[in-house]
Image 1: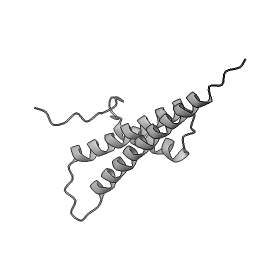
Image 2 (image 1 turned 60 degrees about the horizontal axis):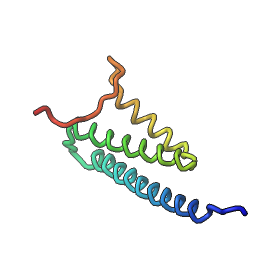
Image 3 (image 1 turned 120 degrees about the vertical axis):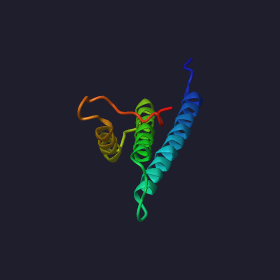
Image 4 (image 1 turned 180 degrees about the vertical axis):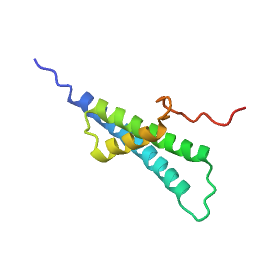
Length: 106
């Protein structure tokens, strides 16, 4: 007699969908932060603030991409291009190492 695992598969799919929705929400919030840092007249956003927002967006995009890949969901080209852009902005041209913002020196 064959046993079906459909209820387990459905539960797993629902859990993955919830995770993807949550991670997509994080991406959208991070994008809004980047846009907010760019908007406004006489913007006095410091380089550190801008780097932090860009890093937050890159981290959110990468988390979503990893979860999508694990779920078998194809990643839109826009996300791949956007990750490539923010990765290139995070690379130090002199050393090639990824610059991660860790906050002000204390």
